[in-house]
View 1 (cartoon, rainbow, N blue to C red):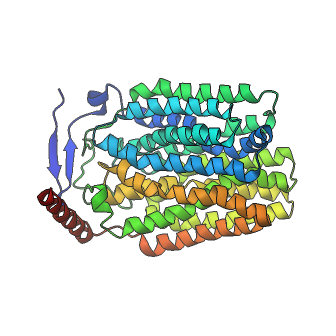
View 2: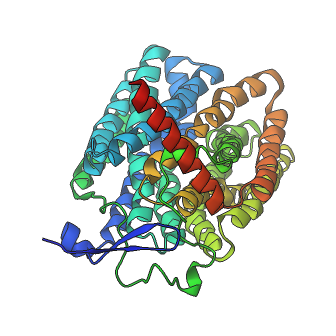
Length: 452
């Protein structure tokens, strides 16, 4: 039986010290980087592979672009929407992480089966988009918070590394869909995709485990933090979701996340069809789309590393501005039929596109703690639903009535606005703000108990 002691800092935050990861799990905490990374790679193709798969799927079922990207937007609705509820169940000990991954794996496998038999759009919406969205959302929200829970003292680039799997994990399937995904082997490729991704998630699910609440590695003094934590100081208090939303920062984080999600998901969904529409050639189009997904993945640990040196807020400003500019350069390169610059611009945009999925969980953990991170970040992550409707059906509608130009300009502008929001409004909550929020929530809870 493990023994531990609890330390309390000057703000009243509790640190549980004395239990090694091996004593708690039977293996080192590095496993809780490797397995979530693998899980993210396996669950990402539903989202990142859709741009490459959509043309063949639409041709097979005689769908237009709008119908195909309704499927994409409905997927985002369920994938982002389930994250908060998974966090609530997880952090109230109602659903263990390993069960979230197991259920997610089963649903991901079923999603591809339904897509293979979507003779009507509603079958794809119910099977691929809804079931697949719930499955991949369970995996994403479980994996992305795992790193901060096991590495509360150094989570920057590690969060980015794990999160990166969500993008480049889809690269082999983007290549497969782009190079050899015709109606002759349509069913086989979808069955194969579902078996690999779903089966892999089921296999790794049994090793997932959270640390106890307030856990802290005993080789790092939480009271006297090292210099390396100056840009990444631990949260002043462990705040619940209700407390968090009584401070002003989450409202701005939600808006910033919504805008960047729109830009990011637009790139994921439309760079491939845009390159095709500009007649850049299949090799260049596949290179641009796979390059976008690859640099999206490898860029995330670099963004996390940047946040270690600058802090998440300043990193947001620089990275979001770069994404906005590079998105507009992709448009210019495509319209100019400049294949080389199209690929270069797509690589830069990809390298910054996934930054919100690193910087926002880091900021949420730094501002409000790790104990309720899955639920806290899940409530911010829900903004992806709104962004997903622009990055999917909204952009498809604009493209249908006027081509790609306006859709790209709006996507780039949203990223630049988000950079401004980060600069002006996303400073850390003060201890006074947190204490006032806790006082208000406590008063509301007391009133609710009296009324009951």
